[in-house]
Amino acid sequence: MSPRRRRSPKQTFGVLTVVLVLIIGFAAYTYARQYQLPRYLAWLATLSVITFFWYGFDKGQSKRGGLRVPEIVLQLLAVAGGFPGGWLGMLVFRHKTKHSSFVIILVLSTLLHLGLAPTLMAL
Image (cartoon, rainbow, N blue to C red; front, side, top):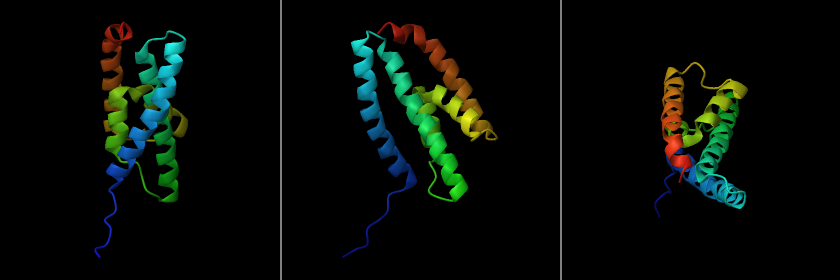
């Protein structure tokens, strides 16, 4: 019998993120539909909550020396719409503030979504 291979942190946190998006996204979509809010706001809220959660989790793990959330997961969440949670995570947890790549990704994500918002709010 061969030994089991462990999943990489990218796979582990990627799968956990998808599960969280499905669960929280369903709740946000239901709420948005009930109160006739744009689905785009539900999307941004879902990804922001998850991004904020991962920032806090990663900060705690960095202090304890535990398994860290891969940077690519945090950055992809920001680009996909979790940029408000990323900004809030940087402020509240003082996490990733010295990484210029995170600031650049958050600025570009913010600008991207500000540009897309008028179109996506109408959907």
